Image (cartoon, rainbow, N blue to C red):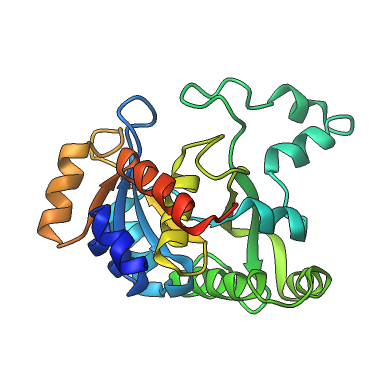
Length: 244
């Protein structure tokens, strides 16, 4: 079913690359951020992949967590942490992100983490280790209480890996890169966490879609748009009955 589905939606190459641990390029929408994120399945992150993101993309490297998993493990949106502490720190309440120009929902930012076995946490090797161990932990089939304990024992916060939480009803309530890239992971059949990084240009702005397409051709990387992902996602949900 998976191969037929991928072929039908012209996603075969993208999903195959994701399963192989390769980077793909995901553009959102002309009426949203107008940005492309370099994306890889978090379970396949390596120091080399993060170095590529750091040098050729240049934005903020982040790792996504599906909404249901985040809720199950008590991994909050950072905006909620700030809001819930506004009485102690009034400025945090005043800085509520309720005016994001491209989004009607709150920021997807979660907490930041380092694995306790890292040193500074910022090197490519340290961040790759943190991301892979994080993903290995949160998707275990053990009870949530065990995974929560393991997260507390093995990770510290704050750190240098930025977590992003998807909204519930994936791609229905929010259609940002957090959701678009996580949806690709579900469709590829890998663990549903993406590590992503915005592609920056040289003129102080994001890299244009045209420049990204040139880059994708030069480096033999697949490029896909938000419209393509949403169309495929709707079909995927109908075929699988998945509720995420």
